[in-house]
Structure formats: structure tokens, C-alpha cells
Length: 74
Image (tube, rainbow, N blue to C red; front, side, top):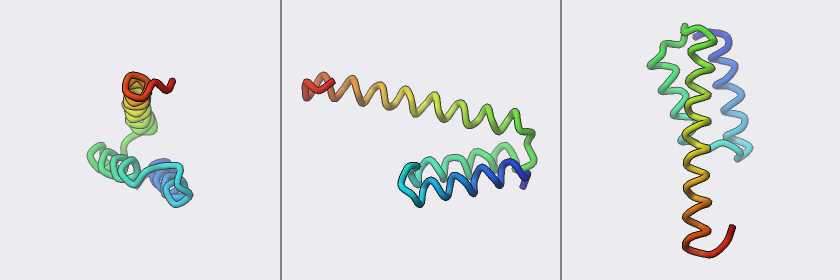
């Protein structure tokens, strides 16, 4: 395991335990980093994180839109 990947996963675990990151997100990164291989360079790992952030931001925007449409709450 690369030092950076291991550090990221350890810090992500702390965030999950504090309730700011979901178990699903933690598992996603563990799986994704395994798929990339733990020895991937930092740029590849950072790109994986960026892609997940983009996906979560799109999901949050869709949920906000649906909330406003269904419940009239912006």
C-alpha cells in the first residue's frame, strides 16, 4: 500500500467514525484504490478522489432539486 493511499484511507476512517463520511464512501475508496492498485501514483489516487467528489456533488444537487420540487423547500 502506498503511504499516501494508506494515510488517506486511515483519515477517511476517522471521518467515517465521526459521522461526516458514509460507510459507502469509505468502501468505495477502498475498492477503487484496490482496483487502481495501492501502488498507484498520487496523481491517479487524487483523480479517483476528484471523480468521487464530482459524483457526490451531482448527487447533492439532484437531491436539492428534488426536495425543492416535491416539498417547496430550497
